[in-house]
Amino acid sequence: MQQIINFLIRNKHFLLFAFLVLLSLTFTVQSHSYHRSKAVNSANFFTGGIFKSVSSLQDYFKLKTYNKQLLEENARLRTYLENYVDSDIEISNLTETTSPIPIDSLLQYEYIPAEVLNNNYSKTDNFITLAGGLKDSILPDLGVITSKGIVGVIDTSSENYTTVLSILNSNFITNAKLRSSEHFGTLQWDGRDPNMVQIIDMQQQAPVKLGDTIETSGKSAIFPKGIPIGTIENFELDPSKNFYTLSVRLINDMTNLGHVYVIKNHNKKEIKALEIKENEQ
Image (cartoon, rainbow, N blue to C red):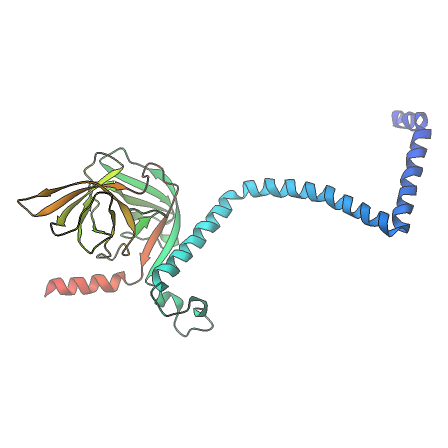
C-alpha cells in the first residue's frame, strides 16, 4: 500500500495532466456531434475487431456442430429430391398445417446422417461402425451411402451404435444396372482390391462399354434406383453362359469414409410382405 502511495506522489503532476486531458476529451466529445460520432466509430471498430476474433475462435470449436447441421440438411434435401422430383406435389405445401396427410406417409425414402467411427477395408469380410443406432431409427437391413455412392447395408444395431456390412465384404450382394439401359446383374466383391467390385450375370444383350456408369437398379427394397456405384474398367463375356462379368471401379473411396447416410424405406415392410406372399403361391 505504501508503494502505491509513493508512486502517486512521485507521478502526481503526470497523473493530474492525464486526468485533465481525459476530462477535456470527454467534454469535447459530449458537446460536439462530429467528435462524438468519430469516437463511437472508433470504439465500434475496436470492439468489432475483438468480437470478430472471438467469433472466429468460437466458430472453429463449433465446426463439428455446423458439420452435423449440414449433414442433417443434406439428408432432408435427399429425401425431398428422391420422393418429389417426379411428383406434382409442391414441397412448399407439404406442412403439418396445410396437408391432411402426414408428411411421413408421403415419403418413401428417408435419409439419416451418421458418423463413421471405424472402417475396415483390408480384410475379406469388412465391417464399418457408425455412431447412431436404434434411438436414431437405424435398423438392420437399411442401405448406407455417401454423397457419392453406396457403402453397404446395416448389419446389426444397438441403442447408440451400428455395424455396416461393407460393400467390401464377400457376403454383400445387391442388384446393379447400367445407367444407359435397364440391363442388370449381381454386384459382389472378390476380396482383392478395395477399389474394385465385380458385376456377374450381366446379360449378353447389354450395351456394355468401358467407362460406363454402374448404379443401383432399384429392384430391392434397400437402395433406391440410380445411386452411383462405379464405372466399368474391364469386362469379359463367358460364351458358355452368355453373361458378362464386369470389373467396376468404385466411385467411393472406401478407405476414406467420414460421414454417411442411412436410407430408410418406409414401404419396405409392405414390399417384403408382398414378395413373401408371391413366393408362397
